[in-house]
Image (cartoon, rainbow, N blue to C red; front, side, top):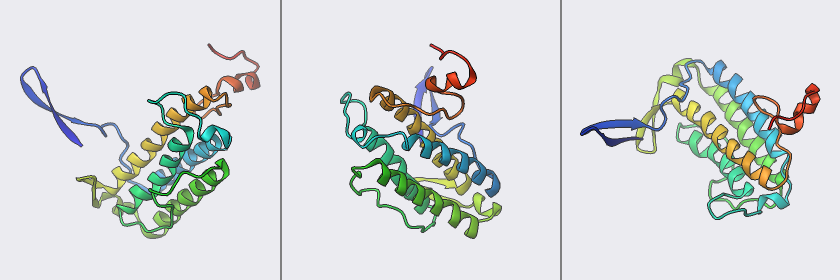
Length: 187
């Protein structure tokens, strides 16, 4: 959403989604989503049931809340574009097991890819939908969906560290994985 700000006496527009990738090819989105989805599943699979409710600070979401938000946001955003795949309701209670969260994530992710593959084409990505009071091209919505997932996955890594869980590497090795390369973990 563009919000005006005052800078040196002039109104300036700030776009919080500036820099988000706009997809122009379905195949590019599917390739990115598959990698990000696998990375998210890897992360979610390292959670314990106990870690889902651990509260470290009033200003930090629990792992359960963060992961459930990642899961429910897939359908919530995608359904605004006219997609109708089955997914959990965004107001559904947070499951008590990590396995349930992983299973629901896989179902939503698979449903997203299946329906886009079957019903959209590259031209569809240029069509606009009302997204939170703004008109976004479907290709932008997909970019926001990917970026949103990455953003909250990053937050989850902090919560996982606080819970004493191993954090898998996504874009490079995590602290625990450096040994696989014959190196000491970086500080």
